[in-house]
Length: 135
Image (cartoon, rainbow, N blue to C red; front, side, top):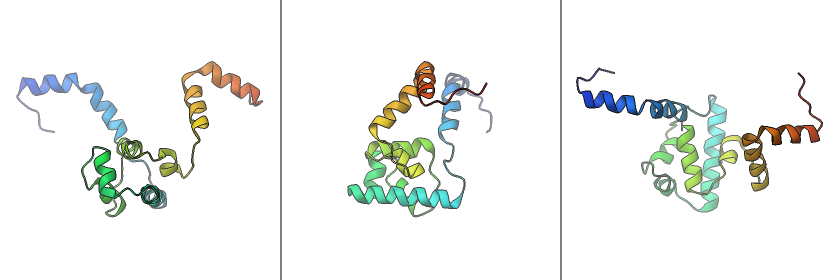
């Protein structure tokens, strides 16, 4: 990127440095093999069809360009995590199903969120299951 002589440009970049780092993370492409991406596309289309949502409507609902979902499904554009999550959330589609092909129940989702937040809860559940830390 060419360096700008404008001091406001530099201030904005310094202020938003953390956002830029997070943006880089959220823009990571989800899948790396053709079969994984084609499966993701097929599951996304399946869910949109099941709900009666057009690709255009799904894109607009997610505050993306009106042709974004079409470009992912038909033109081979690879979605980013953030954009795919936005599409799923805005259209009430299971992100885990679209990405992994696995449906997560609300109870399982709640349990996973709790385990992710609370190390003691995770350790307690693992102890109940008989899975002790090998160290």
